[in-house]
Image (tube, rainbow, N blue to C red; front, side, top):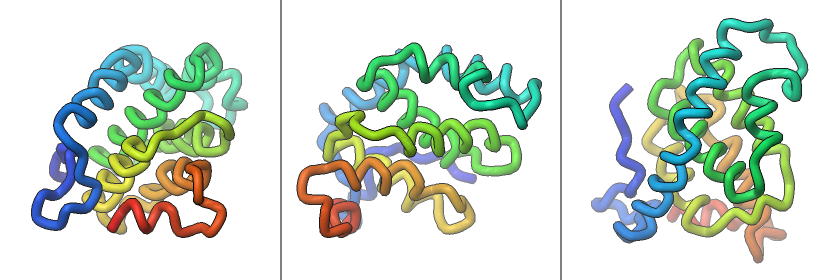
Length: 153
């Protein structure tokens, strides 16, 4: 799969973030990336049936505040969208677990960026909308269910 930039497709305007906002998201993800990659690698070598809280990813997620957990979710989402295959099973589990958490304080820019990543990944990435739709459901005005689609287009 081709690499994605995350800044949006300038031809369509979808998911477009200004450079400062995009750089801020990347800076936050870079902070959690080493620990996230290490946790995913440890969990790949471990028992896949282990309860999430007992995994390296689960312990990492449990150690973070809401902002750190959002950054971890965005990093895992980005990683899974770039390298979506059977080897991302652990990362997709992490994304699903974070998507199930409420009250993380997702921002419009974070959701817009994840939707852009998902769009570029294409339909073969079956879990591509798991986290962005969960995050969008928590945005103000999301009660009608259309917040994510308004952000995307």
